[in-house]
Image (tube, rainbow, N blue to C red; front, side, top):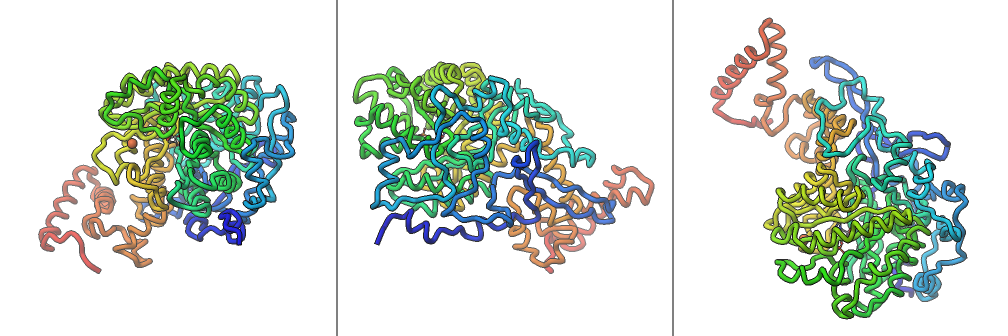
Length: 625
Ligand code: IRN
Ligand code: FE2
């Protein structure tokens, strides 16, 4: 009997219905690009007609950004043991700048895949790994700087536009101007704009040539704000099947990228299953696996072990690496008087290594060699904030900003190699100190995209840190942060389960969208306006469907008014039939029209009438029945 969980999984791999069922009230569509194999997935939410009393007009469908991949497409055949089809394979091959490798060149990876005891996983759709032809550079930044618009760039341009032309005449575009603090968001995103932003380093398009299954997406402050969800098992909890299911679950609710933070056994196999089945970019923190390879003894880490781990993961198809190269030996004493010291896992590992050897961080001293690996596969840097503050007391301190300065220096080195870079940021920061983080990051790192963990705006709510941090995330997103790393309610307490993942993502979708509205993204307000109109017109089904979480909205509504007839009712159980402000407003408008008085006079009359009614029925707010 073979106990390898990957083998067991291969025989039984199946997703539960709750993670794959179509999202209610909408359908998957594909918007064609300039070539037949360029089809950009989106989700189209249908709307019903406005009831006759409100005007009886048709309401256009609303198209929304869709991260869920083929899993929510009823036509797609999903087979986890086969992996997703390699969508970008031809684009990669057409460029003619890669070579196929006969096998993994990483020592550890090869040993793992050839170990008969492990009965390694074979994915039929898995192409042989590739790397850049000798002397070639296969990064999107390299193409962009040579003026080439890749199919990946065209894909994200279409994706970001969300088919706004359909709603342009329906009065659903924004009423409010935004303030975007120096960002310059165009009305329509063109492939040329995408190319230019990548060339300048202001945006990244993470897409490893060994992850052809991924649907291109872009991270930059002139684009929609993105969110990342972390998954991954730890030594104590969770198997491969659960992690794959968490991936599909996370993208269903809107995760734009997913980081696999697995530690413990079967880390290589877990990652293989995740990447082969992921339509979103996958990020990792390679030092975690390197630490596993030396049995958790940080001082035994070496450049050679780390290097082999980078190659192993790059050949599997990881799209971005968190690398804590800014934790310099001389910065470590700056954390000594902190309330919470070093809270970054990667940061603390590197600090321990530096102190044990009294030598400079090997990620820093070998940075150019890391760049050589990155550009051979197009892996993007996510320069880690190993010295981020882990408490309100430690926010914006000397250690944090010293590291940021070094990240700026490293950004310039990466750009010299045309390697894509984003910069990780905090952490725990009170609201009044948030803005300074973005301003400094943009200045020191030449406007490379910022990617922050929250920040949490207070430390007093364990169990609710998706909320403490979504407040900070909304603010920092507005100021120009390109991607927000989610925090779940289990933060600081334990490994998140499925419900925690969903709650964390919802909190971050809200933060990201609130930031997009405030920044004045041309299409951001379409969905708000459509939903508000549906709400006002008592189109309950439309209200559910337009929301971020249609399933929960319906559940909450039906908890008190489950009958189908209630879906046409002009009230809900919050205020009851006689106290619905929206219904009263409509009554007032009708009344005003009938009486020939203006709306304000009518409103006063109407409210007086309602209060009289309220007194007559004894002040009960909800009438049963
Ligand atoms: C994002 C911004 N700053 C940190 N993060 C994420 O935090 C990072 O990308 C990774 O997913 C997670 C843990 O990182 P540390 O604790 O190893 O720094
Ligand atoms: Fe924390």
